[in-house]
Length: 245
Ligand SMILES: Nc1ncnc2c1ncn2[C@@H]1O[C@H](COP(=O)(O)OP(=O)(O)OP(=O)(O)O)[C@@H](O)[C@H]1O
Image (cartoon, rainbow, N blue to C red; front, side):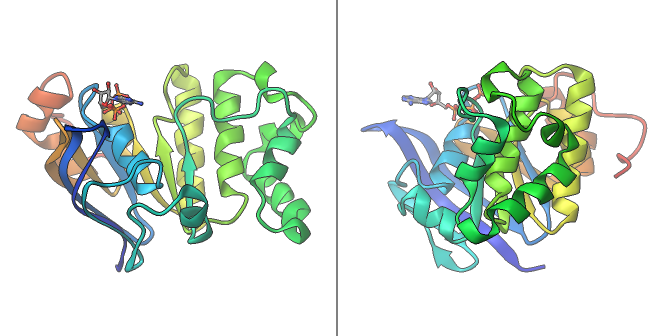
């Protein structure tokens, strides 16, 4: 499979002389679900923000389908086919579900058709089309944010901690929807605190720590790696064999 997104030795941060990413090298192949896990403060969110153009890399390369996007502005990156679902403040609270989706559209002529498509993928949103996003549950808001990012038909979606603060039942629903989005051909790069569950549904994963990728591998292999389990997954490796996909 061809590499759709890569970062090579990316250095980035918020404050001069305080790098958060210390030379991160990852790649995401077309069609994959890749998850980045790692401790709090490791730089996971910073990495996806840098890929999306919210931070300018101080060194290194970010390539989308062979095109350098490091330092390009988010709207340019979006036009090249990248979508981004931020961790927080990812909906317009005072607008309805439908209005939020309309704002995600790049092509007015196709807005209605795309919204219908989103209601097929996320039936709950169709049922709540007229509800203000700010009155929805955390999980429902996450669906609004994901559907909005999918409105322009991105090739690839960056998803920052989709399960944060959600009940276990809702995490199942949301992960299932992420798989459904991926099955439609959208490549996924996800950051997740819920490391075991996220890796179990991923093709590959990276463990990021102190702004550098420490481990890389198939999701199931990372789950079975005793070092990864002890250091980053809060306990022993699984003993029940590879995760079913
Ligand atoms: N806007 C900001 N200004 C300054 N420092 C920031 C900013 N956002 C994040 N940081 C710092 O960057 C470091 C990495 O944060 P980041 O959010 O990328 O980590 P993370 O791996 O996503 O962590 P978590 O799992 O806790 O969300 C942290 O030390 C954080 O304090």
